[in-house]
Image (cartoon, rainbow, N blue to C red; front, side, top):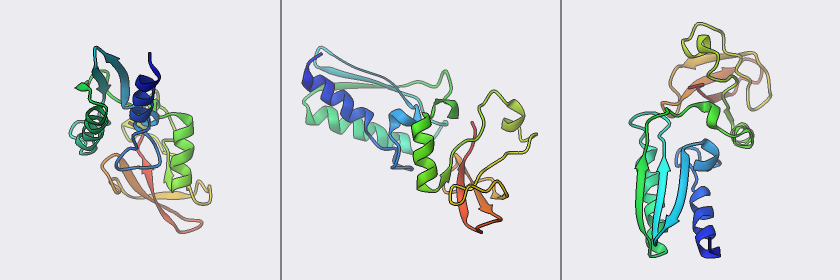
Length: 162
């Protein structure tokens, strides 16, 4: 791989999520594969959920990088296996917390959490208190819920465990 090819790959990995710009599409786990073959950029991505409006923006960002580097491109969107919050990297979870979004506290292994049959222990990203309550199942985006901290009284988004 040439230095230019590695720079292109690094640039794609660094594309920020349009809805949460403090984390990249790689850190979010939606970037599955990147390669450059015969002057063609091949990228595979997985949406966080079907119909996610950010996917078109991400595809446009990838296309811009390909065009800027005079590469043909193919962007494959795969739905299986389905994206899961387990794919969010630990550094990305810390970035979410610092940004004011509570990251998923559990893994999808706990099916009771996914089905709403177990209590979520959502810690406030502002003060760290676990004394929080859900205000609305839907927050600023469909993949987040709106919570409020009973201790510091701050509202915050919780990235749902999916």
